[in-house]
Image (cartoon, rainbow, N blue to C red):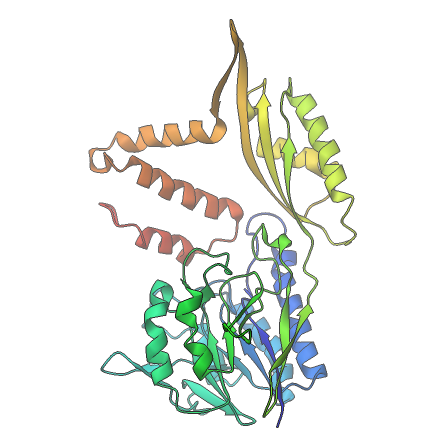
Length: 421
């Protein structure tokens, strides 16, 4: 029989911009996008839905996020369409002695969370899914065997052979939260295409996640076997360049698998460079900003409030500190009313000299110098100033973005081994 299913991933429910005045509206975007996928699954009468990890934006979600997720999954449950999922790196919680929200959803029957067991020799054992306990490593639907493996980090390539050794069935799908180098835009959690190739001999369809850019990989003979739908919404700035959507797949009993990439419609996002080269004063800079921004926004037809990242560039004749965040925000709001705005200030101050112009340090360079001087004043950090400055700025950036949970910040600190860890 032909089995039809939807493959989506990296939903990131719970994502928002905290303390930015748009928390509720941005928070709702990700639920709206997933709601559309669920509605399509029901309309298409698919046999199941696959979620390739990162259903949630953080492992420690708010109770209201859990409640709204149940509301979204309830129509699938009523339609008898299993939602089969694995955990991504965002779904994990740091304290593994506690039950995760994904496990709770599985135990309640709203999704089927697949997680294999490990053997004493370090291999894998994919036990059949037990609906009573909400646990197991594989599940069979319509004659198709779906195996699940969540995020296992940078050593994923070393596990491919062990995964294949554990597979004894035919008509197989592997739901795996991993990226493929040269295709995935993320920096960690990827494997090389050659390392992934053995999976093509064990699985007819490799359902990937992790990277937010859609792509597919093929065998040397040209058969597509690995599919990453990317994230259906724009999670981070820069993703506006990617197609956004999910796969609708037909898996026949014999013959090739067919797939259709069905697009979603995320809130408009714009990342734009504003060239302020040679601006004499703040008023001139703001005037040029308004003109350039207006031109960039003219091509956006979506009526929803835009997510905006502005990158200020150029050498100016006033101190870049004069373009503070509040002043820039007010100037931008005279052109449009963005739902959220982030500013990257890469301006440099230029001063006239006797024999021409001298370029002084940029705002970012001044900031790093000040932090390094403060850190270096402590004997325990001498020689590690650069490392500590990077950590401080990473924490600062997470907080300013407004989407960092306590566990995200704790994860950064736990990943840094130093005298204060």
